[in-house]
Every structure is written in structure tokens, then in C-alpha cells.
Image 1 (tube, helix red, strand yellow):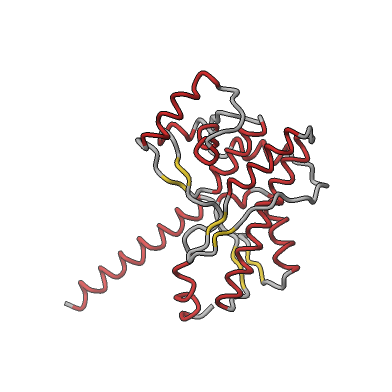
Image 2: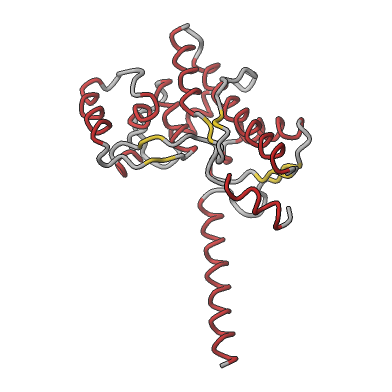
Length: 234
């Protein structure tokens, strides 16, 4: 990708994977995945009925409800709707258990719309509606979990096709902690390669916060050398 291509894509580098939704309660939601479900849907299953009115009150007031487009929070919401887990004890727990539940032989995918923007954003809530409809129809949780994963992969495919159509880009780098999920990674790579994309994945550097930490260290080291260089030429 040359500089002109990168600049052309820059307005669309806003996370297209998930449309912004309120994250009720701020930091507390790291441990309460179910609240993000309410942020996306304002409805759905009410296993925690005693908390419902409080959550709705926060939603209506807008207090402590920062917007998020995190793919991780979308997986938390899906796990909550499916009844896998409402509260987590560590980052990624709900997503890990959702991946473990999924039937690897299921290839169906929940459809989700994309707001073409720019920037373009995916309607993550559509995937949750698909989960709810299948739950009501008595579909097995293993199949539902797999269809959710395939739906996310289909959104990635659709977003990349849109970027190629607009900017002629043919290389896709899959990065971010969500791609520790091997089921999602394989599905996304398969779909993109079938569309003729060159797909880059992590090998030596982790795709999650470890990669970010390494990048921060590299930037800090470069700035430090720049300061030393400027001091020498004075």
C-alpha cells in the first residue's frame, strides 16, 4: 500500500466492525457483559430482571455511558444473549467460552448491515437479533455460536470488499485481540482469500495488547533517538 492509498483510506479507519453503542456503567462493564447487550438492543433476555430498571435509567440519562465500537464487547454481548456468561472474571473470558461452544462444522452466518458512510460501520446489533431469533426458534446453542462467528467473518469480508471497491486495496491485515479467536480467524482468512485478497496475519508479534505494547516501545525508542540526535547537532 503506498502513501496515496493509505491517505485515501484514512477517513474510513474508524472501526467498521461494530457500530457505536453505549457501554453502560463505564469500567464496571468489563465485568458485566450483559449491560452491553442493553446498549445495543435496549431489550432481549432478562435473566437479571432485578437490574433491568437501573440499566434503563442509566441508558435514558446518558450518564456514564461512553460509546464503544469494540469487537470484544460485541462478543461479550453475544455470549450474554446466548446465556454463556453474563459476568466475566478476566478480559476475553466470555469470548473464549463462546468460541469453545461453537460448532466448527456450521457454516451459516447471521446477516448484518453496513452503513456505507464514510466512514462505514457495521451494525453489530443485527448479529444479536439473529441470535435472539434462533434462540426463540429452539436452535442449538452450538449452532447459534457458530453462526455468530461466521456473521462477524462475513462483516469483515463485506467491509474489505467495500474498501477495495472504493480504493483498489488488495491486501488485508487482520490484527487486534479478537483475532486470537481461531474460529473467527480461519473463517475470515478463508472468506478473504476466496475473494482474491492477500491476507496478513500475526506470526512473531501477538495480535492483542502485547503487540500494542511492542509498538509503543518502538515509538518510545524512536523518539528517544530523535531527541539524542537533536541534542548532538546543536
